[in-house]
Amino acid sequence: MFITLEGPEGSGKSTQIKRLAKRLEEMGYSVITTREPGGTPIGDQIRQVLVRMENKELHPRTEILLFLAARAQLVEQVIKPALQDGKIILCDRYGDSTLAYQGYGHGLDLEQLRRMLDFATDHLQPDLTILLDLDVKTGLMRKKAEDEWNRLDDYEALFHERVRDGYLQLAREEPERWRIVDASQTIDSVQEDLFRIILDALENQKMTDQPIKRIG
Image (cartoon, rainbow, N blue to C red; front, side, top):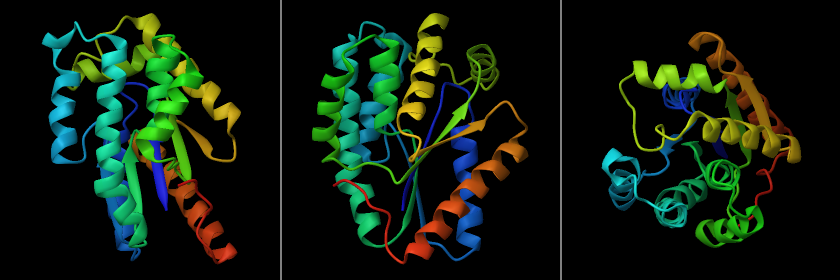
């Protein structure tokens, strides 16, 4: 089962994924955790280009192509093999981030981005995507407090507002795949919401006695 966590900056995805993986493993599931951009040696090198503050000259098209390159490597090197082995994949961001950030954030053509995503991912889509929704001001304050500020965080607040609105629109357009969790809650409360959603999805998968249908 391929599960992705999405959300604006500071929504706590990385923290929550680690806790989710541990709990699922304690239940006997085989779990792989990964992130975007990154997750492979090649992807991690691309990540450094994308996040460094000194690279503010990156054009949005360049940004997109770098994200897609890292994603293509992650799909082929990590995600597809894990799915073939019957593992649960928990991924911190995936293709929806491109639609939210480069599409809604930068205002680039969504249909063109979707075609590019299909090529980069070989049409592989998540079985379940959970949006950790959080207001922009709170999220950016969290990032500053964690001392993890990077080039992407440094976009203007209006950019991040468009990203959040984009995520909510994507969730409305595809309610069968998306679930929304209020990330302004305590870490423990968010964790319980996430865990319940994932257990429900796994239970539904067992009841149908077959893998959830996916593209790719």
